[in-house]
Length: 133
Length: 360
Image (cartoon, rainbow over all chains, first blue to last red; front, side, top):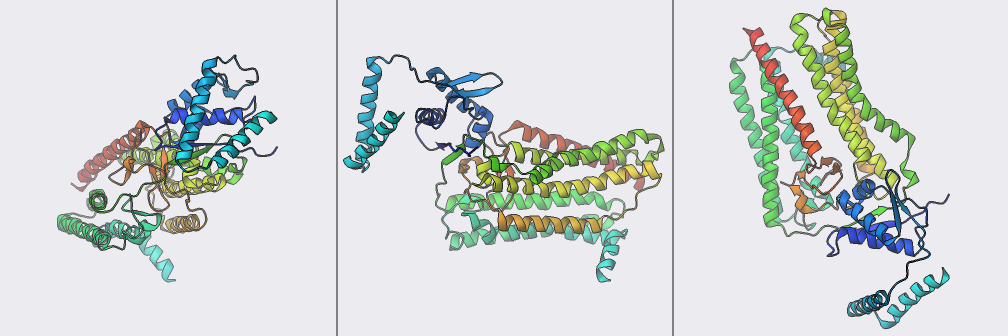
């Protein structure tokens, strides 16, 4: 079996709390299909050790993802990625919130020097990835 | 022939002046080692007295002055300790002169630590702070190349052997208790207890390096990281196991053979030291750390001790050189050291009382 690679990157000087950095990245990997249903995530202690954070930080990240329906946490078996192909019905507030965050994100990266063409290219790649699944 | 004579000389019983001179000279090993480890050697990883500094700080007038003061302090302090020892031990005899060994060794070591702390504080004040890396990465899928059978064997030997020797010795003592001369009981029991308590250090270190150390801290490549950690722990295991072997044989032999052990371990030490030097050289040349010490500066207390309550790692790479540091933010590390210190103190006081009684 080919060796799979997926990495979590934690910036200790970031303003974003460590548990949210972990949760955001695992969620992204699950949405992009890098993490497939049935994949076991590393034990909380192992991941916390490798990231140099308290066990509770990783446990909190796993709990958030379990509440969102990405993970199933079974006592003694760890955290398992579950199939989330039939998402719950999202209300209009979710779409509105997404639009708002996307605008802010685009404005933010434009302010940091990314051109319109580059931003459009990145968004297009994401859209193509979503449509191909 | 000369080597054989040297071994014979070192292994034979010493006269009082020889023993006094030898103890007086051994304290200079500590400043010599501290001197050797300071300067260019410690600046190799972008640190100066364990402070992250600009690469040219070590060669600057301020850096040179700090280094010069540090070296002067360690040598002058050791000289002071030695003079006190030579004056104080002048009236001792061959039985009670070994009692000086621990106090003067600890005084010399303590002086080196204090001088390091002063140099670290000076560096913190005078050097511009350089921010360290703040990003850590962790693989979500275990890397298969981390597993290696011979490293696993070394790891398990390191975790088991230092504790197994004193346990075996204790079992032999229990079964042969009645054959032990009454004047040897204290030394036999404390010898085995000391071997056991000293054995906790390498066994625990090997365990922590295998299971409670961050792979990426030692090397980005998991296999190289495993090799680095195993061999680092193995160096401690070799020294402590050989020491433990000496303690255990000396404790058990009177119970088995009915007489005091008269064995010479000097030749074995030559093998141990060669093994250590070889491993260290190999470590430095082949698997030196490349990840650049991502531990926050604020967690290095006095520049020497890593204290981070939130970090689950029990051992982290040393700030300079190829060694390691325990994470004193964990209670288990403190409790282990306190336990060992209590045992050593009890043994030292008990032995001192018995030796002084024998001298009378």
